[in-house]
Amino acid sequence: MEKNIEFKPDSSEVEDVEYYRLSGNTYVKVFQRYSKVRVDIRKYYLNTKGFLCPETKGIQLSLKSWKRLQKLRKDINSSIEKITGFALKLIEIYVY
Image: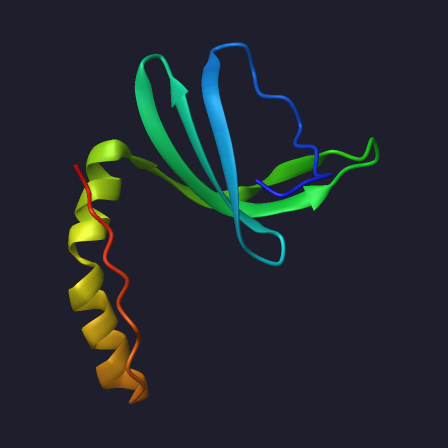
């Protein structure tokens, strides 16, 4: 998580929250709610109190869906390469 950025506090049932900046105002939020891990990707905006708040549009993946997406990354990168003509450097990500 980047320094000097305050996110709007989550409700009390959310535990273990981590944020990662993708680009601009788009963040990945990894958290646990009711003993289930979720991966949330969406844009954030700065509210009048100075907190970053999530926009309503985005995607929230279960851990199962996140792992499936990770397994599909090579196929997705191949499709991007075929469409754009540019090769993407693959970074190995191990999912346990």
